[in-house]
Image 1 (cartoon, rainbow over the protein chains, first blue to last red):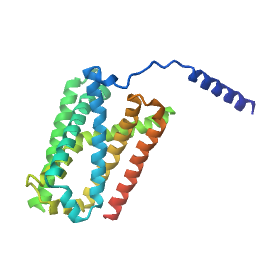
Image 2 (image 1 turned 180 degrees about the vertical axis):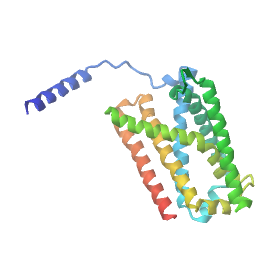
Image 3 (image 1 turned 45 degrees about the horizontal axis):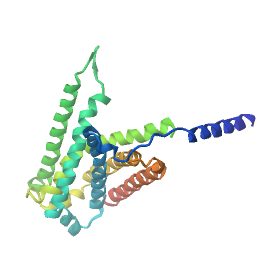
Image 4 (image 1 turned 90 degrees about the vertical axis):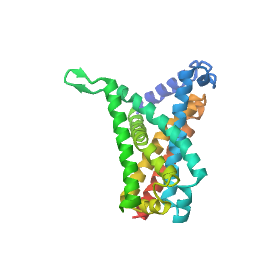
Length: 144
Length: 112
């Protein structure tokens, strides 16, 4: 019981301390002050489009045939998809460029060249993309 | 947040980042441009989405990227100087990802 009490007083003491910590004022437009900061912010904003497209796919699962077919064609749909595609590509490029920083591969004693690792990921991504588009065109089109 | 919980959400963020990086561009081209460019018909695309494997593929492409986006967007509120809104924004973002995942599961199961 005494242990619990001492723990409580300790945590409240920590709370007091935290309340008195100095917070440097932080302008909300900090990300406009340097190009690298702005690029970081654009990368974070890609999440809006990634999340938005995931929701679009979710809606597609439930749409009846007529509405589904309207959603995947026409100039408005194509235009919105192009914007989402640009943001998705920005996400892909920034993600693949960060890969060697997160994923360190060793071959024996030697670290695999990060550039080689990134290049391998790009090749994998392009091949995978061609396979997906090819499969859909083959299965949905003439093949099936 | 306890370290173990952070690791859990971060791994979902990371998995969603990989899935959206590798699969989103091609999938966006299919749902947005393939019909307009005349590669497939809208009817065939709709028929394809009724396939159970395709629906499973879409489930993965819905759920993990939602957690990826939730992670980034909930941190965005802190980056924009709204650190006091950290908790509510995390609850809204991750809550939406969880609801989206459950709805996608319903969409996949009812379509089987």
